[in-house]
Every structure is written in structure tokens, then in C-alpha cells.
Length: 100
Image 1 (tube, one colour):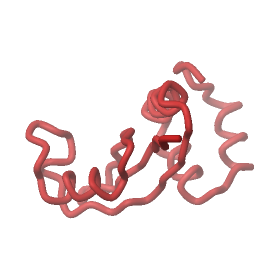
Image 2 (tube, one colour):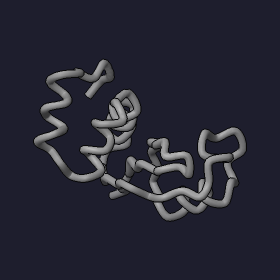
Image 3 (cartoon, helix red, strand yellow):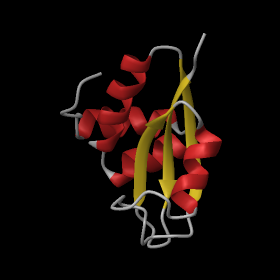
Image 4 (tube, one colour):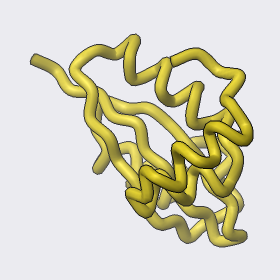
């Protein structure tokens, strides 16, 4: 069974980038080396891999990526820290408009 992953990178300017892949190591290398022309991260290196979540269904991974991309910085940081109480609190204050 193939695995798919969402990941969050922290850019050199402190911003976050959320993506989806089937190979986190390869994809992080591509981002870190600037091999993806036009990508948000291209001029924001060096990068730090902050969060990874595995999925067995590519559609579920893509839906989660879209959801997290729509989140506030505070919600992303709570997810990265594993602070699920804070994440729930923030979700109640600012519900996500994305699917999932």
C-alpha cells in the first residue's frame, strides 16, 4: 500500500508552506535545493521540516493539505506543536472554510 504525506515547512522568513507528496525526503530535498522553479519556497531557503502526517488515501491527503493551507498561522503552529486543545479552541473561534 502506498503512503501519502502532508508536510509543513518553515521558511527562512518565518512563513509556513504546506504541501503533499508520496516521498517526504525527496520533496524536502527538492525544496531545500531550489529545484522547483516558481515554488513559494524557492527564494525562502533554508527551510525546516516542521510537521509530517501520513495518509493511505491520496484524496484524503490532498483534502487535508487544502484544509491546513486555509488555516491561520496560530492553527498551523498548534498543529506543529501537537497542541490539540489549542487547535480545537482556535477552530471554534475561526472555523476553517476548507473541506475536511
